Image 1 (spheres, rainbow, N blue to C red):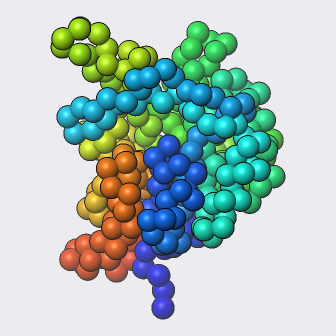
Image 2: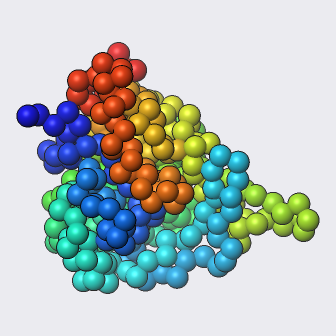
Image 3: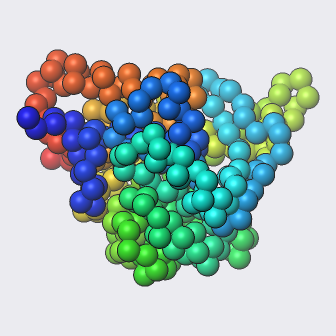
Length: 304
C-alpha cells in the first residue's frame, strides 16, 4: 500500500512531510523519551558552527503576542563534538533522514563545517545564511543575492550531499535571493528563518532581550512565511521546505499548497513536545475531510 503522506527531497524519501525545525528539537535524541521518533519525516538538528559557542548573554528569550522572541546566539558544542557525540546518540533512536543545520561567520567556516558533515551519515546539509558576515559589517549573508550565491556555490563545490539554503525573511525581495541560490547550485531551500522583532520592558524602558532585537517566531509569522514560500516557489524549480508559525495539519496543508514539498515545525515544539507527533496523526484525518488522496496533491496548488 502506498504511503499517502510520503514526500521526496533531492531523491531522499520522507515518510511524511513533517520535520522538527533546527533549534527547537535539540539534537533529536533528547525527545525520544516522549515518543518513537521514527514517526517523524525527518529531523533538523540544532545549528552547528565550526567551534563551540556559549551563545548570547541572558536574557535571550521573551514571550510576545502569538509568538516568541529568541536570541540564543547559536549555542552549540562545535562540529567535532556534534559528529563524535550527538549524531551517534541520535542514530540510536532515529533511522529517518537527518538535516545538519550549518552556520558560520565566514565563507571558509561554512565550507569547513559542511565538509565535516559531508563525511557523516546525515542526509541533507541545511545552510543557515542568516548569520552575520563579519567581513561585511555584520550584515547577514542571506540579505543579498550575491552573498547568498557566494556561500551556496562555495559549499556546493566542496560537498557531495544535497545542499538546502535556509533563507532569512529580513529582505526586500526573497524571490531574487531564492533564484540566486538556485543558479549557484542549491538543491533546495528552507524558508523562512525568524523575523527581526523587539520587546521593551515598560517599567525600565529597556529591551527585554540582551541583544535588543531578536528573532520572532510562532503563529504570528505564518502569513509572512506563506507569502515568502509562495513567492520563492514561483521563481525556482528546486524543492522548498516551508517553516514559520506552523502548528496544525491545516497549517501544513496551507504551506504545501503555497509551494513547499515538506515543512518544519518550530516554536510549537517548545509549547508541546508532542506537537509533531500529533500533527502527523492529524494529517490523514484532515486529508480525508478535504478529499485529498495523497499529500503530493497539495504541493503547489496555489501556484496554478
